[in-house]
Amino acid sequence: MSLLALAAGILLIFVNAAAHLAGIPVETRLYPDPVTGFVYSQQVVNGAVASARAQTLERLQFFSILGFLVLIAGGAAVGSVVAGRALRPISELVAVARRVTGRNLKERIALDDADEELRQLGDAFNDMVERLDDAFERQRQFVADASHELRTPLTTLQIALDSVRLDPDANLDDYRHVADDAKAATVRIRRLVEDLLALAEGDGPLPRTRVDLASLADAVAEEMEPLGERRGVQVVSSVRPGTVILGDPMSLRRALTNLVENGIRYNRDGGHVVIEDAGQSAEWVQVAVRDDGIGIPTEEQAKVFDRFYRVDRSRSRAEGGSGLGLAIVAKIAAEHGGRIDLQSQPGVGSRFVLTVPASPARGGRTLAATPGAPSPIG
Image (cartoon, rainbow, N blue to C red; front, side, top):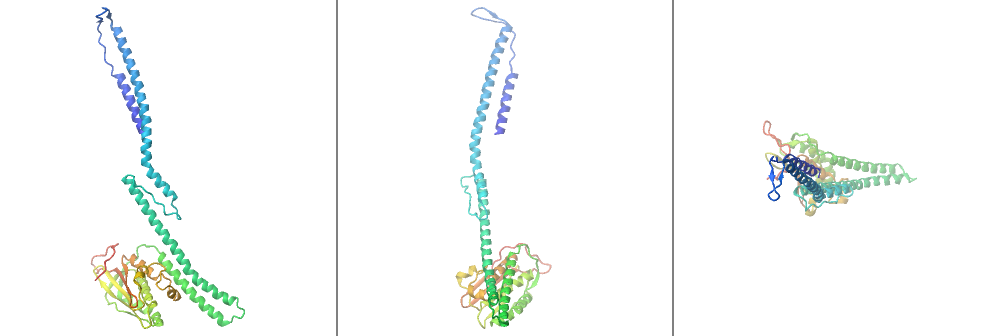
């Protein structure tokens, strides 16, 4: 609007200046009147021309100023309408942004009738709010599930302590029994807290080193063998020597440990858990943890990597499981640029296939820093 007024003002000044400077010189002649025979002198003619010229300039100034005012008024009206229509989507966007809070993430902005650029801005804003809504919902669910999981062992511990504290006839055996219950509860709480911390860790790049997969699998099988013996389950590794992968040995060991522990917990007496090769390519190595336990129903398989999800809730909780083991495995696989796949049949067993980067040969080409999702091998 200011630019329009400035342009109109400059045009007005230019027109009036041009009119003043563009005077036509008057010839110095005598002009006889053919009717009266009166001869006009040069002074009379010059005066008449000057008077007419002055009247013309006055009218020019009047109409130019009038046009200036009309142009400003019309421009202001049209500009207000156009600016209102152009800025309406932005005003809606600002209003929606002000209404969006952590408790109100369902607001969306509709810019179907806006320009392409503003519509793209609105779509980007809606996508951002959608991601925030999903993140907040996962956070709320995570906190609720963690609170529920912590409440159970804490309640058990409190009941055990109250049973001897309020019993005047409690003896040493009673206190020992309570101490055993307290120890089991604290172990479960510690396990849950450790798993929560593992999931809460940032998704930054992990240290990548060359890891001997066979040695890693043997170490996990040896570590989990006592738990398998208590459950009547045999744990073995058949990974062939010489397979080298690229990744963080601590997190990869935890992933295999969680998979083996899961296979032991959901197995039968006399069952087996086997860590075995599952395929290899130039860039990827697949290692599988196979069991012949109870298996997982087809409709449940897509959910087993969710946090706190259990196929058999009562059995897993009674055995001290946190419901986070497979979620941690999925997180570790994603941090390595790989993935975890499940093949299972109820009553037959389950097979979890972990895909991780292969280590390039020394002096050979290096692996991409951020590889895409690997395809199944074989």
